Image (tube, rainbow, N blue to C red; front, side):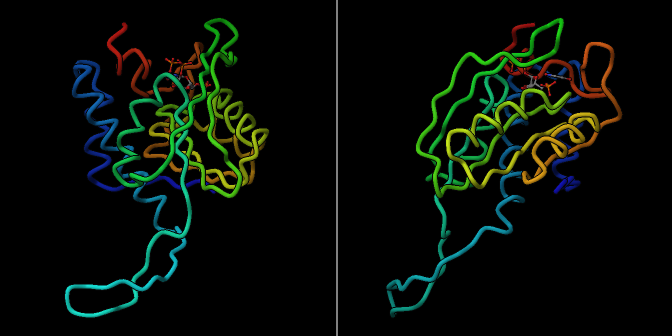
Length: 205
Ligand code: PRP
Ligand code: URA
């Protein structure tokens, strides 16, 4: 269920967002692009359905995406991935889940939830960072409790600890990530990582 996407173009963008002196505007743009590439990879297995269309010359059969999609960013950092995912799936609806890690316990605190009807839809959860896995596990549970049956989690950088946690808590959820890093430090930050994704995206350091 773990898909580490090691495409050279993604790796090249990863180097940019990992660098500590990359300005917010370049960081945001790269996060958006990586999100688009990861969504494209997720879409490899999407079902198609056949329709009949008319070209300027004749009628013919064509294939279109069979499903409806919902993109759900985990606020705040996940917001920067929405525009990238929408480039690949422009007809998707967007739900929002607001979670923030408590600075001492590192456990997620829920502060917002606004979701469309999830039944029968393919749900893509986006968040750049999978550290302890507490936030993503909580978001996945909120989505399941709200009726989602088909969920994929897309993140940019993950820690082995978070992957193990999600695999244990939500073994049914595929994870797509651009990198599996080494470990978490004593503050539960990913090492080498990129620091605080939300602060770097929104320039709130
Ligand atoms: C970050 C990140 C994830 C979470 C990952 O969000 O965007 O949501 O931490 O950590 P975890 O796997 O240990 O839960 P943060 O709580 O810093 O909120 P923000 O996006 O508002 O900055
Ligand atoms: N949240 C982040 O933004 N970065 C980390 O390394 C861990 C959690």
